[in-house]
Image (cartoon, rainbow, N blue to C red; front, top):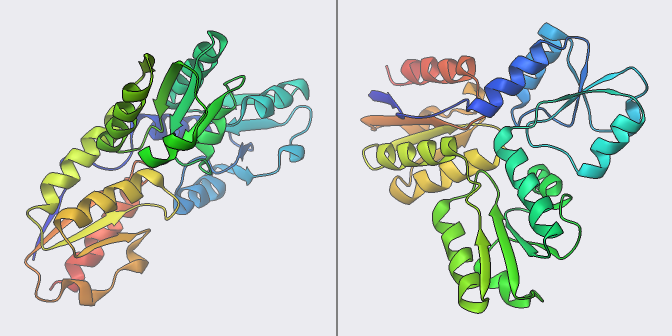
Length: 276
């Protein structure tokens, strides 16, 4: 069986940067999971003594708190500084940008519409930077229920599909005189999505590797399934099933932005063994 990796996959700039920051801050703790990959978080704990805390109150004077790549709410960041915690910010710059946009546009009197998952930590953080009149939508249909004023600004979760964001934008522009549109979907997301789309059209089985909570990995899997019905989202080689590869001739592999190379290599090796 032929095994081919997507042209673009795996660690993005923001994740590489965050892991480097965490490795440079041994004996610290991340506030929330640094990235959406449990295996890599375990590695940081075991090799660098970088713990994970999801309790803001666990950080005291003099502690070092590494801020997750997805960012945290503005109020929580301020509280850490008030407590004189040593804050090391590993928020991805692509996430910092929509935070800044929401803060600036809100101050200028714009209603803010955020396209994304309201329960996702990135969106919780981005939303907190708008003073008031901020709304989160996951589909164009949800816009109808919003009580928006004439001036609207919109941003998107960094890992969403551009086609879906365009639907949101078109609906806003049809109903409002002034709409400020900011494309905050990151380049790595575009590249990985384009690459998985191309590969899935050639493969008869696709493996997409990444954390089960990883939004960008879920998007890659969704795109892959459009073109290759035999597409599977796994976290590690332990999730592989030999049945998936029986009678298959071409296996394509992609990985989310939080998936390290060592996990990808393990998966590739396991698939090779299964296909012998």
